[in-house]
Image (cartoon, rainbow, N blue to C red; front, side, top):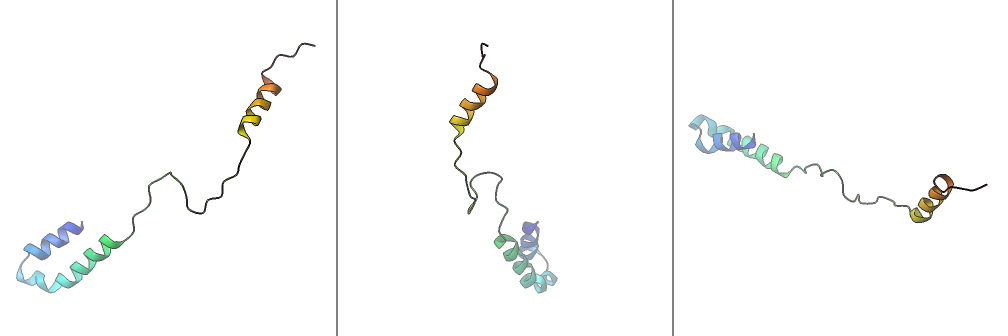
Length: 70
């Protein structure tokens, strides 16, 4: 969309030159606006918790999947 404004300002008629400043300002604003970050990855300031996942996995297996002889 911004390219159509640039193209019009570069190749337009003499009447289009009066809008050049506004169009170029719009192009500058559109190109300088920050883009949304891609999903995923690390998040700055995100707190992580250290969990003992190996011991939790072992305990889960002991509680549910080990046969007990009574």
